[in-house]
Length: 417
Image (cartoon, rainbow, N blue to C red; front, side):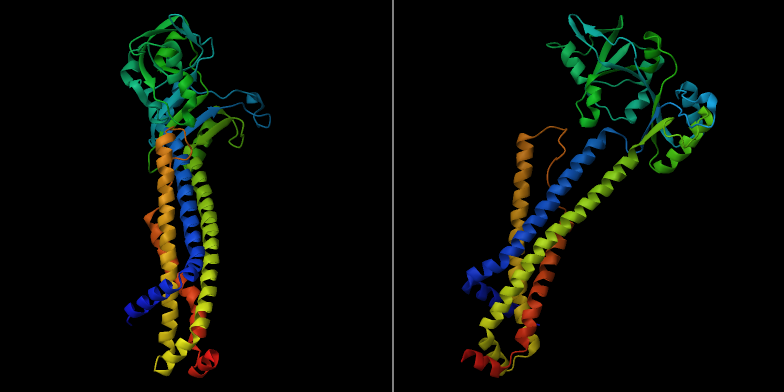
């Protein structure tokens, strides 16, 4: 079928009836614009939220010891505080080869006064193994992280949070300087880079090697926090269940006791947000398509008006041999042309607004903690939108086209008279 002539006729009709064509296409253009804007900003929020989770390894698990509840069957350990030790870490490494990295997280419970010359601060002081930085992704803004040599040699070195460094070293370079922590001097080897809102706690923290922490701060070998990372092929949910069963047998508490051990499975948190955003995207599509549907109805109404106005023309076409199929396609193609032009303008306007939003964010909002990092639309969405536009044009023109195909030359003459 020759499409060139019907398209040319449609464009000619649009030029001759500009106001009518604009009114017909406005609803579609507006619907597509809102759809692109909703999906683009929705994706921006999704990427911003997931970026906040980049401070943690994907398959990371945090285990915190609590207190055995009163409902525990073993009365001897009721109210007992669940703690871990080096032997627990050794057994976990031997029993679970899927555990790639594991580290305790010791928090100093004494006076954390830390000073440099006349400047003082009271930060959180933590003792960790080098593996810790493969679980919680902490990056140095300056200097380096703690390493295995620091651990083996009991090195008196520390990694400072940015906030701690700013208070202690107002006008000086912190690296290589010594700070006084609990009457013991430590050398600063690194400054923690400012991260997301999930790592703000690190900005007011000091990290030192696990061995040094126990040696210099006179801490017990029991602690209530373990962090670990699993291999990529490991199912974190199944591991969590198995690991809690293992801890229950080892520590003597009932695995159904929710107060004994708290396990934070990072993979489950990410999956929960993924499900949330899938629901949000479905809702945004629903809103956008509803607006688009209103535009389709508007075009369909306009096409009915067009058919009524062109009744005489359609009758003449039939009188000289045009069949119903060609009449149907003439109306449908005009509907598709109007819809496509309007939808294309909506896509162009939506893309321009998204570009403007990204420019504003890049120019004035450079904070890494921002939940909204920028708007974007996948090419698949654009392709699908174009498909929807063409389908919309067919739907909008179908009923008017059927009405037009039923017009007879006699009806056309009566209508004209």
